[in-house]
Length: 501
Image (cartoon, rainbow, N blue to C red; front, side, top):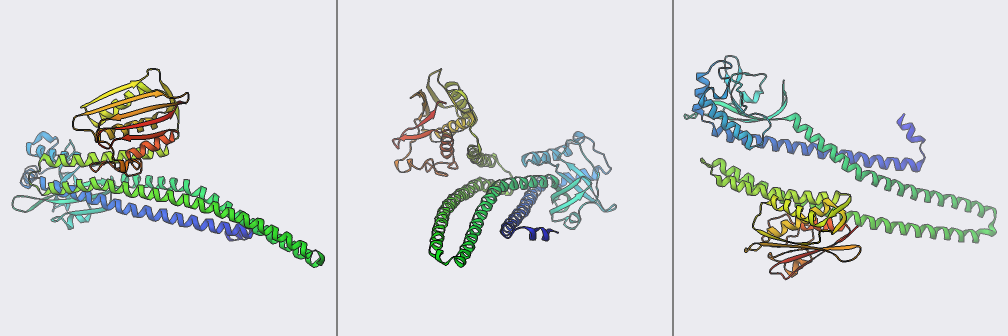
């Protein structure tokens, strides 16, 4: 029946339908392939994380203490409170701390194999209430096969849902395996997140795909209609030639004129297509650069955290130095993610103007930002008329001022930071905000590039190079202009010109 419907469609419409269906099929295939590849990589990452946590936790559990618990409390629910035994309490607190530090959603637990019943029994758990010697019903076969070595357990089902797990052996002082420690993550939650990402990707792709399809359909339809029109004209002219030979010259002249018109229109259309293709190519290149550099900047702190974490695993007595190093890397990661988020918010934001009293708005914005970055050694000088107000977008202006503030604190001088902010009305329609500091300054050779994406203004910069880029985007979106002035040694001034309404 579907074939008959296609046959009933006119030739040119059938051609356009086949092309559009082909593109749609390729797009669906690309989205599905990307989704399953991403799902596979994400699952491998989760299993690797669970494996690392399981191995680390098993090394922190004293096998002799664990053997003491399992030998002295042999019946189900012999322990109903974590405080019933001091050794159990100590092991429980270790597991609880590991669970909290690794942000796990499911409890960590240890278990021993009962050869008589061919079942695993739970012993220690990170949960506040013990689950002592309850059976692990329908346990995965990998637990028994790799009891002495540990490993990972890919997607498996229990009566409580579907899970991803990793386990590692716990050994006593003689090197004997006395128990297994298992770490889990619920696969249902993992799949739900992956499906949510898939829906998001489909929505974004649809937003881009539908306008492209409409444009392609319109272009093909217009071209085919012109060809059809030209064909009809030629047929009519041939008939007239056969009937009236005396009109041959006149008919040929009209045909040449018609062809000239078609050619001119096609040339103009080609120019439009080439221009739009170039614009789309440039936008795609900017997007590719943004994604590549953002991914690279995020991977740096993550790699540092992994390295410090692995180093701490091999240290028998991990010191607070490792936690400090991890905290520094996490702060770098947090800063870079916030910079990326600021750029995304500016790009996606639709301007919504509200009335803003500049003095109060700037004071609150700086207070919030300085409190967030935790800096106290600075002096703030405000010179703003109490009655000065503008109609502008609160979020965009807040992002711009916050990024400028972070920039000043990052490159402050050793003698302390002095921020001087002035705002005044320079015409009936414009006002100017001057944002100055006494920091390290900006060199002449890079001053014209500091608003570019991923451009760092100083060799000691620890940021992602997106702060001033986000500022420039926000000000442009507000129909404003930003300029920078610096002697290259001490101090920088940013002048922002904005419409009052």
